Image (cartoon, rainbow, N blue to C red):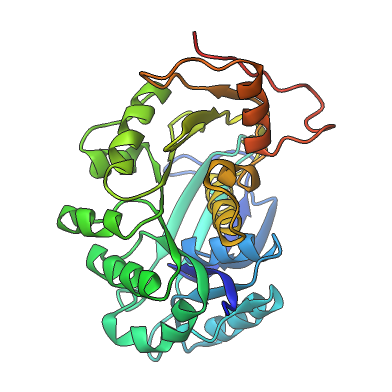
Length: 324
């Protein structure tokens, strides 16, 4: 019997968010209106988001044996996240991530990620139990690609579905990684690595997603520079507007979206409904899929169900248009 709906693998550290009215110039300064500290890093962000959706979650990453690491463990445990597979390195500072957010939601990031804050093969035995009891494993691609392949293979060997977020740093590992992947989530920059060319608009994302699906994944989620996301799977393609994401910084949006996909997969929701837990967009528009006819009213209803848009939300009726 599986103990964890989701196991998140990636960077774990303290994130300090500073709120300022505007970004200072290179030689200037800005008053800080507020600040907050929280678990951060791609691995922790996905774990927290999934746990808050009611999933049973384990987290795998590397932190220090310092006071910051101990405080971080307490905060993660308070989120009801299993931290037994966290690696605590002696003589290493727990990673620190600083984000500067202004009134327009522009963000600047500073990261202190010690070289030792990466999983290694020698860390895998301590994570074996988590992989063996996982329904879905999310791998945030911030470390060496070869290690991501090791993690994905361990997850698959344990019977879990695999989601990767991002692109590997070594293209030589790409084919092996995609062959072990069920869902790939990438932004425009990642796509240049994954398919070899930039993806700028939805139509290009559809073509690129189809290329990825031929390499192993069953679902591709591509976030474009305007904040919209294209979801593509064997039976269809849709585009999710970024309208509902205003006021959220990109790390929060990304973690929530990936966590939604992971929770949906863990609950064995049908592949053609996997997006409904992932986000609540203000508007959605179907993207023309070359070679497929446009749908009628049934297709509109399918899109609404797919996105999980319920009566009464949002206040304005979403605009759904069919490709011509």
